[in-house]
Image 1 (cartoon, helix red, strand yellow):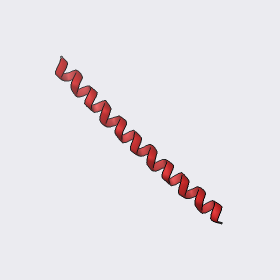
Image 2 (cartoon, rainbow, N blue to C red):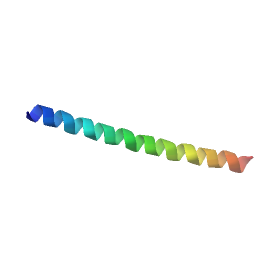
Image 3 (tube, helix red, strand yellow):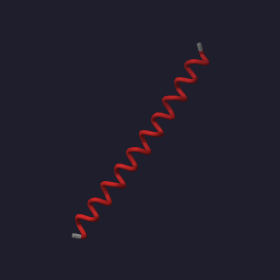
Image 4 (cartoon, rainbow, N blue to C red):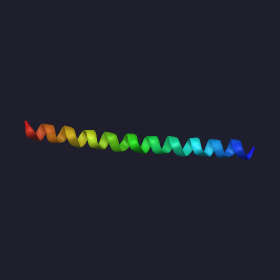
Length: 40
């Protein structure tokens, strides 16, 4: 039972980390697009 709980907790943390990294990637992408627009 404890192993299952630990596994679910680890999976939840991993998913949260992935979502955070995706958010950072989107922010960086938007910043790059803004730089491209200002360069034109």
